[in-house]
Image 1 (cartoon, rainbow, N blue to C red):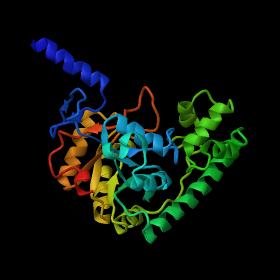
Image 2 (tube, rainbow, N blue to C red):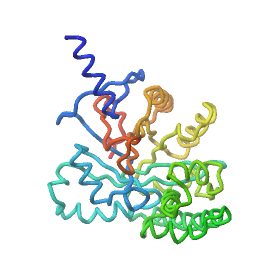
Image 3 (cartoon, rainbow, N blue to C red):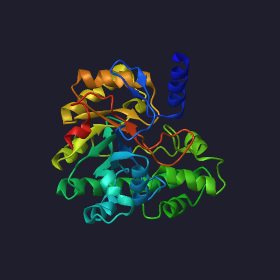
Image 4 (cartoon, rainbow, N blue to C red):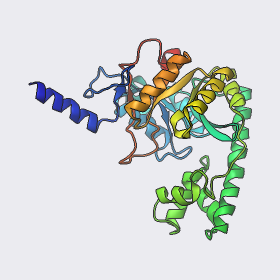
Length: 318
């Protein structure tokens, strides 16, 4: 009997990326049931570089059993705003509102020294003047960056990138994934992954060092709007431990209140490290799939939070 149970648990862990770490870093898994609490506070819609429309993403989350969702598009809240009126009118199909609560969200680009950092904003008032001003500044920065990326790609023998990426964005906030898709469709590169590896990734020709708003300015704009600032995927910045501690300290000093301990298919060891950082700095924790589209390497919508101690989840403050 013990062997059968152990095998069942192992199969769940392999099939289900929603493995939640204990405080010691050990992971646990369980089959999906109505008792499992699923939350996702890091997702992307077609308003930025996701595939699903905001409506489709919310409906998908509800069907997947997610009970609280934040659509955190890059440097725009248009996806959330497109749902806000619908949500208040309670007119969406399939009883989605009764099943999945939508929380205001965005993923803001900012600058800490020479490094680009992402801050997830949750639970803000989208009509706050300072937030609107901040979003307008980000929109200008992204537009200018797109022009520079296209110029560099043209020098590399790939003309027409700006029009191509804008066409694929179709009015959404333009980003490097749109250029990657255009490069594939135009026959310049075999895959989007290769486009980032050779042209668009860190240190490559299309990696434009835009002077985003500072970390402090970004956290202030979020806090002024009544929101909570979350340090997104801290380990993706590939910092030394000393540098990561300095970043986290600067984030806390600016008014940041939470850190992502789960982002996508994160490893138990990474989760344990982030838990230690959260404990040392008395930060709340947040979780998200970083869902953009269905893929073999990406996480499914929704993260199990039943194992997170009471009082630690950022969702308890929203």
